[in-house]
Image 1 (cartoon, rainbow, N blue to C red):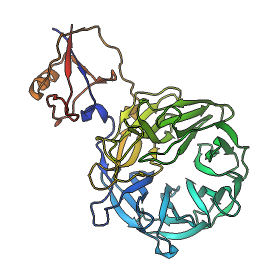
Image 2 (tube, one colour):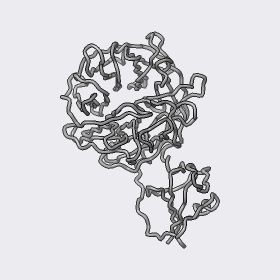
Image 3 (cartoon, rainbow, N blue to C red):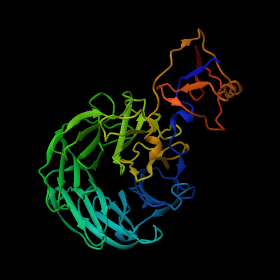
Image 4 (tube, rainbow, N blue to C red):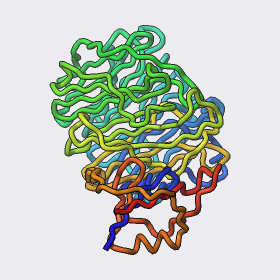
Length: 465
């Protein structure tokens, strides 16, 4: 019996982009107040509960920080417009969220550049209690790490004694003490490894990328180590060289957005000796055309490294640029990466010139979780969620092609003839990156290719021995 090999050109089939990620779940509620462009988002996971908090592009005039919860592991979400009227400030921005060792939810929100408040919920986000003012006057770009009963917050102080400051609580956020840890300003990223060592990355304004760490839970820090310069130009949809940091064992991994190679790219540096020596910078994204921005990295408990980011074929970008959300996995803690996978099941415009500065990914012992914002609904930017089993993203695909001879003409297949071929046992199907496709989801329609129709399935060329 002859073996048939299919080679698929184009990326328009959802199957080729999504697995092993589940179909996109809309987080934003279809309610009367959901007419805002939801932006930068943080996420926390506790067992089957998932919590998300975001700001909006209209944050300067509408006092809403949308908070969402799911108690069914992300199958569906409920979103509410969180507002703290007590502050007297309408500007809710730069939200961060975390879960402590009791499963209680901690939220950090910046109000304009005047105030930084901490909130605690003991009922899964239904109600919020124990509001604590972390700091006031001249705050920007905060980040938070929750570890057991401890909370660590870093930010740049922009007035008075400027610099990078840290606030620490050892009583679940009821009280904080704070002090300066670096006499510099910029965008901070903070993480804690499994040995409770704190790692901090800084994109210092007009200066470069720096790294420092603390062995004693923030009391003292190593000297700031210069790693690299950076280059950044803003464009529609993104406006800052946002950074991320992930650490496990002796491996530390830092990313930021850079424009040294023309458009945006996700650049990274990596250390295998706890931050003493570094390799890089190197590009994480697979596609080097257009622009890639808002990168985020995280380690899972087994040492696998996960990176998510936006991608667009345009540079510079504009209000008509089409974005999509992508993912890369590294089984060797960032030395090498598997081929990129598209998480978003469609391309989309942004209905605001700013889609938020960060959209994080989170990993536990079972899943990698991702969230982002996009304008697929045609009126405003809404939040979306997806996840994938770690066991499936770790499966390396077969890149070996059998020797074949190309038929002299492309064959355009209709859904019926394609279905007949796929129902036979002797066939192989690959996408354009050479990845073996092991199955087809039911319900996907295959249409004939026509010139000028981007959304159609492009030419399917039959290759046969």
